[in-house]
Image 1 (cartoon, rainbow, N blue to C red):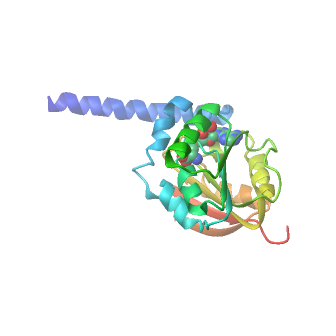
Image 2: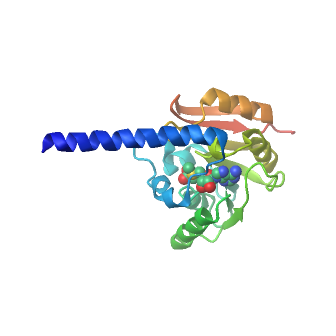
Image 3: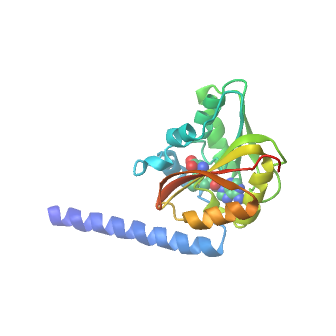
Length: 215
Ligand SMILES: C[S@@+](CC[C@H](N)C(=O)[O-])C[C@H]1O[C@@H](n2cnc3c(N)ncnc32)[C@H](O)[C@@H]1O
């Protein structure tokens, strides 16, 4: 009985590892955003790493009442509600995602939480849909690797932030689209950002980059 259970467990872990690898390799060639039917995995608020928890990410970012914040690639709204609560009724959150099903789930969560300060936008980062100098903060949590043109996405985010505004980028190794820290920092720097803080470690980190004043 115990042996059968061990074989089953080993099989399940093996299958998950093969699936993870296939997804990772596949996403190098094609844009493969996290499917809407898998959104429950995102909503788990990852129990394996503290770095990726919504409360930790929002807490590190110094989000203050009255600010305007972009939740870029909001998915099912895991960070949208804590951000909306942090900026308060005088502040605003824009929750942007490329998939309608993710935005619908995020809107349900925002409604259930009673937050009236969130706008939803269906658009792709990198498509130039964000405008200029609008946001005090932006979060990009396990999204960058899903975007076909990452440099264009970072340029969009740079333009959309106000001078002095901060973009928080979180990556965790469990995500099949994981992006290494050095590569992300190099892309962000090329877009015009300067590093302002780093939390976590090589395999699970939150990187803060700032748009310099006077840009
Ligand atoms: C793994 S989920 C993360 C969701 C959320 N940031 C979180 O941590 O809970 C990645 C999300 O990025 C979105 N996404 C992928 N490519 C995008 C793009 N080019 N523009 C905007 N959103 C995108 C996907 O639709 C998906 O909802």
